[in-house]
Image (cartoon, rainbow, N blue to C red; front, side):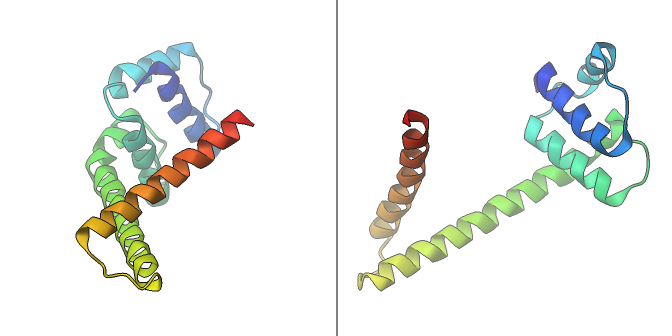
Length: 124
């Protein structure tokens, strides 16, 4: 995680507990949690906020990282299952057989549509 991302973690925490953030606080937190993945740290912060009334300290983030990773992985798996189901529906609606090759073609096409949409918005 970058120092700027550590600052973002602290800013999110401050939305709830009104903590004061300055460069010294950011540096101190970054020394402790800077080695963590930013998305995992955000998820760990959310876990703490949902389950605890304790004032957030770096140890809460570190302690929640394993559960945050599991939760993020479970969500990614759920999204993949939804996407696979959607792809199967598309193939079936087109009257085609659901083969591994056709599944992969449709999945790649769907990924590229998202990239194309982002590219078009940026180019506009």
